[in-house]
Image (cartoon, rainbow, N blue to C red; front, side, top):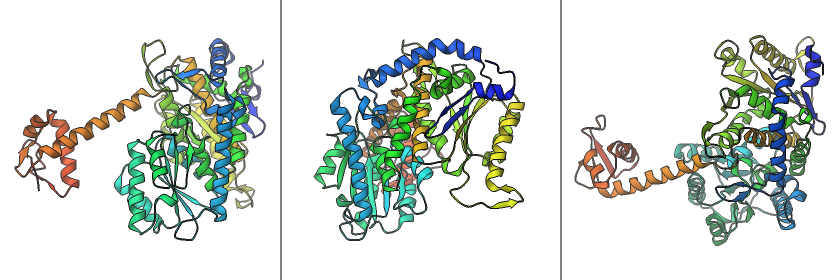
Length: 522
């Protein structure tokens, strides 16, 4: 096909989803037809693997689990009727519960109405709902969303402090196992704060968890309002189309069915074997070409819309947790990955775009362009020019400036930001990640590094418990304490210093000099 002019190249390297409208434009990338043809066998194999995945093949070999987040927006393709029925029932339960909260049929036991959602979760159990709230919540939203996604005491205090009274707070706790420390800690902190205000916790709490988990048992024992399912075939970073994203979304007024329909439409379009018209395949090809299939360049995500500020954070987890792997499927040490960072346009034209244009060529860009400037109204800041015209002009200017410096970009263009479009965007990136993982022969659906970090944290807390027993009224230095607990002095020093700063019963003398420091306990 002729690609000798900019417009003919645009027509060749453009693919669209019509409803909702999503366009992928690779005309400003270095990708050429020969590159796509060279990857065609790999892309064909990846699409075959995707069909097997959707058919119920085991994808997470570590845990012998299927990966079925694609079924969440199309229950009819689930591998068995029971699974499809469970998905439909969960969607119905989300909508019914949200409607009951909005109508006042479900209300705080002390009276009044629920006006705020306090969500305890981490990773995908927080980033997905946060993205949806930022993108889709309107000023007239029936409820606000506050997320406790870290085990930072000051951060928790600040978030709850902004709410003031918690009488109108509905608490949603999201944890597959019920044992995730950050989520458990957030739950316990908000429970303490609610009860300190003389309010009941159980009748204003909802659990999203696996049947039979610790959290499920707690919710039943304490009389929580309801429990919604998580399934072992849905990973956290791909859980936004499950109750994890749907319940918070529904509570803030999101069109749940529209969100799922948008995701399903993108899923359907990106099953196409015509790679030039398969946006996920072409996006994965673009990533592979730019990163040399080795993650040699980072992906900068620049959405030109304030409501998509959190998109880069959401994609950091989705992409980096899925692709950042030490080993390939054959067990060879490959240290794969794809670094993601970004913020928003045009803000970053006054921040890091200077380096993107003139500095190290260690990146490629994915722009997100939104055609509709605002829902209604038209205001010109100068004759014939609106603020939205400036924003779009900055996108075009930045893209052109990068191209003139030999820096590649892709642009994902949508006509507006609504639930259908957000569903389509989520599905596009989920499928691009899965296809890219097939191209580099890594498993996108396990996370051994994350589990290693959790285990290491547990070992630190076990060491802390031993140190607390070893610190007595008799002052002891770090080396003595380390010898008593059988650990490295440097590890003990970090723990002891934190204890001394935060616990009234642990004291440290000579804190400025670790070699002389001594610790005692009241």
